[in-house]
Length: 119
Image: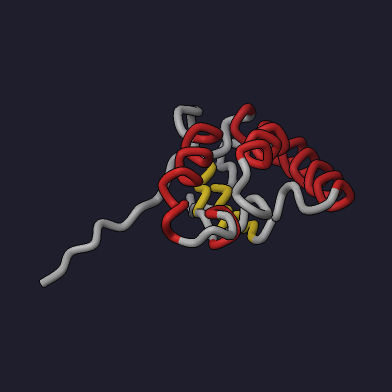
């Protein structure tokens, strides 16, 4: 059975209440319509999960996306530049911790990574 992928990008949770409400409707609709399928799509979220990397935004994103992982969807969140905030790379570790605290440790949520090898 082929793997299905549902690709979401540039969610920018926390930017506006209207956008967050629209995202809630999308997540609930997809979750409701696909939750009983044996071949659920893998949810790939590529970049800019939140708008400016604040801890509260990651907490909100986790709540909005909960219907996916609560219904057994595999979720692959890939951070983008907005997920690290506006302070550049020196803030990267702190912002990554917010992402990790919000999503890792939840069953079916994993973080894709690349090991860089020089040589």
